[in-house]
Length: 91
Image 1 (spheres, rainbow, N blue to C red):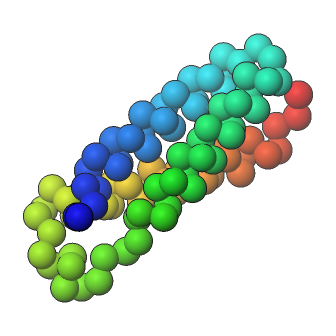
Image 2 (cartoon, rainbow, N blue to C red):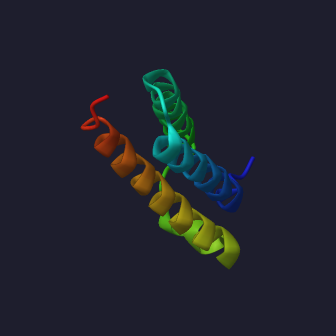
């Protein structure tokens, strides 16, 4: 079964957007912590599927999937950055 990188990228983007919205508007620690835990779960789930394709696999991917992979890596990187930043936030 082939990995749909575009679909995974869209999923991570949506989770990241939801996380950022909650973090900006959280009015209690439990809401904030739940958002952090949810984004960590997303990153952990996707990282297991987002291995870098080998050169042969990369060349066989349609262009949309190549862009999907690049978007996925970008969103996962942004999510990890935001999660690290959230560790420095004190309630």
